[in-house]
Length: 93
Image 1 (cartoon, rainbow, N blue to C red):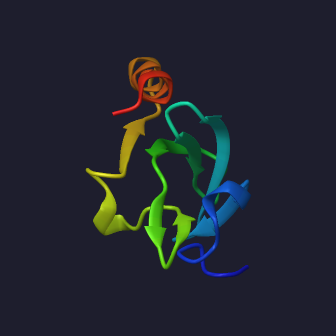
Image 2 (cartoon, rainbow, N blue to C red; image 1 turned 90 degrees about the horizontal axis):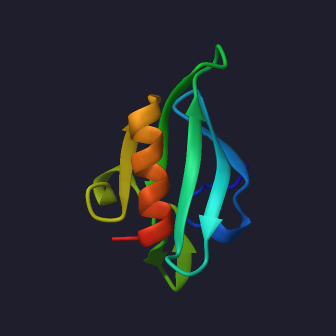
């Protein structure tokens, strides 16, 4: 798979990084917010990443680790945090 830093986020449905699989589960074009479910190699959900595209060389990309806190947030796999993730999807930031 191509480097996700240069692959348009709009094309990403799933990718693997750090031995975890990230699967896109939601996108809101009005807020331009994506939610990716992160699972470990055993298939357990470790968190939900809520992200906004980051422009790199004119390409809308998944934010890097350094971009988190600005272009992305990680929410635990709990009912409360999943609800918070979907609030960000709905309302943006």
